[in-house]
Image (tube, one colour):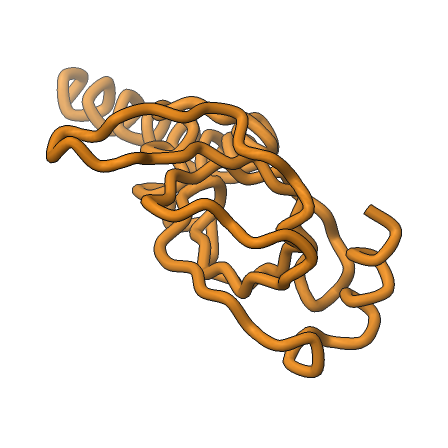
Length: 134
């Protein structure tokens, strides 16, 4: 019986630690640009997928040749969700982004799942105002 009690205590502590980690980790990975931050956000059930918006006024932070010999660019963009909360995201593109355009980006934390260009009228008005100040 003592072994079962200790086992249940250890399991309880692990569950509490996992719960606290799932709640605390999203704040620790926010605006981090590492593979680890993206991986942690991707597997954390407390990190919800969301849509954010960005302006393409930033220049690439890195230009490199991909595995297939194609040009690739790394961008770091300030993004806003529909509630106006900002976050910096990093992602790679095989295209140079045209300046003064808008992007709609699907994310799960720091992990960019997809992105695409959209028209100005598709950006929520409150977000548009924030993006114009950038």
